[in-house]
Length: 252
Image 1 (cartoon, helix red, strand yellow):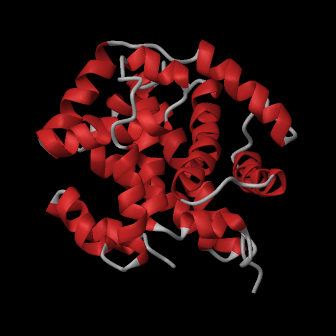
Image 2: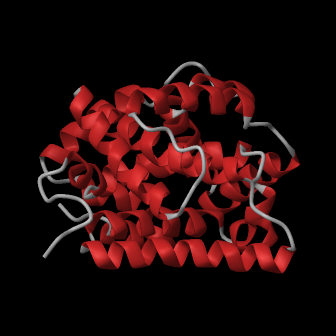
């Protein structure tokens, strides 16, 4: 049976770990709030009503595509496109092409950043693998102006970070909702994870501390994970409402 992503791919290792996906989620939650097209996520009401649940569902959907048989993966991607078309019809406008590319670029970038934070540096070939998988997702969605290579993507990514992010009233509202959903302590953990992961432009627009206070904690957590106490740690740092969803992400 042909799979969308080969079984030995580094992409499966990245997206088969709940730990890595949690950090992908942390980085994406920062950039989502700054996206100039974030008003589209508010249009349906799902994001402001449950921002963490909405973001978890996004990364979980991406994981299902990574591990799916090829035909099912393509069908899932087509389903995403159909949902977006329905939202566009309801609003009577088109989602900007840049918004689609921004999300696709986030999945590539934070996949690499999260894995390297928790494990090791990826080789150029492995980074290209990550790019190729999500490039195929973009092709299936018929996105315009897709970069053809990893190096071209890296340049476009830098340009997008400079041109397509802004701090707005939506940004402030979304972070307020993050805090309500997480509580004070867990919210601070989220901010610190974002300090470790987010590109400089994202940190600057959000006013995040330049000092990664969470870095020593990450090193301790890596040791705890090695002795199999990571499940207990997740129970302590995650709201009970989402802990089951997170454990389900662990495919390793």
